[in-house]
Amino acid sequence: MTEIEELVPHWRNLPEVAELLGVPITKVHALLDERALVALRITDRKIRSVPEEFLVDGAVLDSLKGTVVVLSDSGFGDEDIIRWLYTEDDSLPGRPIDALRGGRKTEIRRRAQAAAW
Image 1 (cartoon, rainbow, N blue to C red):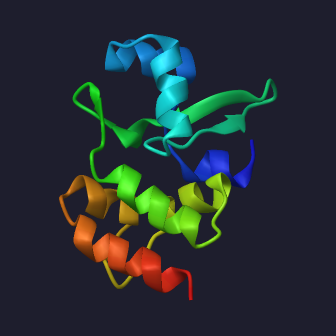
Image 2: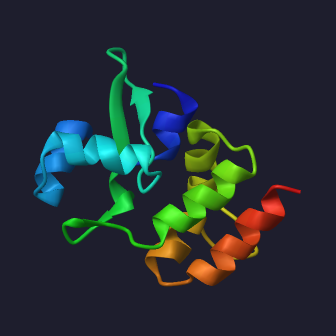
């Protein structure tokens, strides 16, 4: 198991994401292309998977896309984005993903912009 796989407690492969969202797999691929979701190839089989906490009540966490775009535009790759979202930050306190899920997207996006510098 890699460090990033250990950092994220629960992963969902793309067919599972499609089922949880109630959409065809092609829509999940579109969400990845649009940067509304981020996936990594994990496990020995290198299966594309999404952190489960990116999904809330049968939908994609609505504040995720803007944060992913800010980090992507700053040069973060997909693994870097997930690592940043899941790394504890004592000044929050907690992880950025928890703050996003708690409705604190403005603060997290400000921190994402600062992380680029």
